[in-house]
Image (cartoon, chains in turn purple, blue):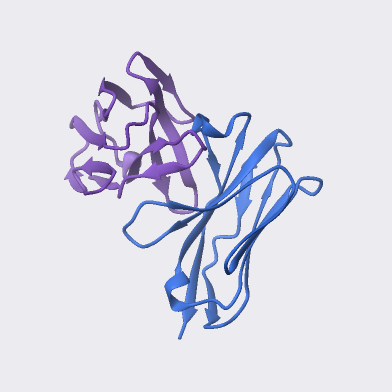
Length: 111
Length: 113
């Protein structure tokens, strides 16, 4: 089983719909992250959480919200999806040595 | 101007070639420098990690950091078809385990048999 699991892996939705991307990890790390990857732009940080009670905005948080339900679970929501939120979304955790462990990604298409 | 610039390629080389991948950056506060490798339809995985200036070697891979020039490189010797992937440079300020990385755009590499 993967250390960082994301669901769904692929999702197509329509403008204005609410979408939730879920992430769970088995590495026991406290810190979890949501990144977005777009062609030509690399990965950009959306939100991060250092523990269950600590949520922080990243570089591009507008239009997104998150929930840290437990140490192992961190979900990303798009309250009203728009086409420019079409992207590949990655959840990650970080080890004490600074290595990020990524999930396999959730590909979201907003029509 | 982006904080981290990376030539997106694509870069195509024959098997056995030496590959040089590069990133430039503008923020002199970056202290931790990483290279991630991303295969198609997969998440990135850490390949090399260096702190401050200098070289680090791991098998066929060598990472170089030149803070004076704000320039980092990844060299791949004796490249193999299995090295075909997208390579992302990443950097951070302060403690390495914040997870708050600034990534380059990624360079797509194809190694042809």
